[in-house]
Amino acid sequence: MDLLQIEGGHKLSGSVQISGAKNAALPLLALSILSSLPIKISNVPNVADIRTFATLLSNLGATTKFENKTMYLDSTKINSTCANYDIVRKMRASILVLGPLLARFGQCEVSLPGGCAIGQRPIDLHLKALEQMGATIEIKQGYVVAKAQNGLKGATIVFDKITVTGSENIIMAAALAHGTTTLINVAKEPEVVQLCEVLANSGVHIEGIGGDELIIKGSSMKLLPIENIEVIPDRIEAGTYLCAGAITNSQITLTSIIPEHLTAITRKLVKMGFEIEEKKREITLKPAKQIQPFDVETTEYPGFPTDMQAQFMALATQANGTSVIDERLFENRFMHVSELVRMGAKIKLKGHSATVFGRSKLTAAEVMATDLRASSALVLAALVAKGKSRIHRIYHLDRGYEDLEGKLAKLGAKIERLRSES
Ligand code: UD1
View 1: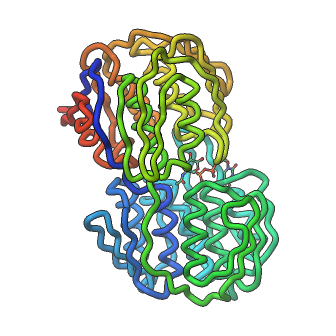
View 2: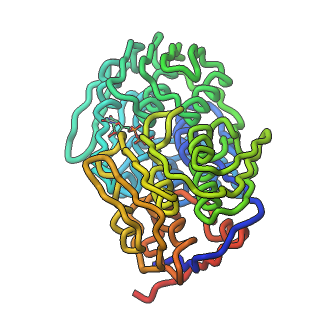
């Protein structure tokens, strides 16, 4: 199993190009199920989750080719409606095939994703919405068995809680349903917006894109002429590199980004004393005179993303004072805390809140990655820890960060990927 070795204490400099967003690409791959044409999706990050999703689609009968960050998909050939446990257990986002498969074929069986390192993560809201659209749903032997023989029907659906993949699933289902669907309290994440825009460009009538209420006119099971798509930049990868610049108090520039998608993150960095310079598709972070502590609460977009919570916790260890981080979306998203403490961080946990006492002189340690974003917090801490840290189980990082060590090395970090003997 690969591990990362990082020698801390080096400043970063230069620029880094941000990849396409994994969380935008995944629903777009799922959307191919609704396409009447083979489709080409560009700016797709070469990360494990994307390759897993492509395997899922090819298991269903689609043809897929992934080269030069471009995914060529022909999902018109799909002849199976079963997403099996082996693939869903690797990646919860596999649940994104549920809405499109059911809408197109009137039935499907998708393995129920289990809990994961960051919490229970139920999919009850996806299922409830599909039932409101006329589906019958049973759980059999760990599978969601969904049926809507004559197709799904438009309905008015109020999401009790904002759910990103839940919104995406139901938006795709509604696009092929009979009649009009109104979705209330829908997620507004840029990844959801891109999905809606692609549907609108394919002739689907959608009102309210970017807001929390959508009205979608379904095509009555007619497949959609979806064509070329370019995936939006990854705001979480971008945020992670901003934190890498910040924790080492360096000047770095990110290219190929959409600055507006990063507002919650850059505002927080400015409050901490960093200077942010924005251009159309670029951001430059400049060092702080003294890194200030901060308080943050994770919430839905456009608020501060839970996917940046762990990285900001690493950063808080270098602030001059006490920071408070409140995790509001997931019940167990503090797995990185004990590893950061092993590197010398001073963090007190109480319920969904973490108090970080800065500034700590971190020292290198052997640490274990536990989930995708928790792992990136350990990489950030290692950039400033004295000595050589080793981060194990980096398959978590490989799920979502394209060429992390290459990009960090280009910025001047002393980082290498090693193969562990055990
Ligand atoms: C997506 C992102 C993930 C991010 C999360 C929150 C993808 C592939 N993943 O995950 O990176 O951390 O949004 O921004 O885009 N919930 C329910 N019932 C449901 C669905 C969700 O109770 O049916 C709860 C969840 O447990 C959680 C909250 O709603 O507490 C938000 O989860 P959700 O937005 O659904 O997260 P994902 O879509 O799984």
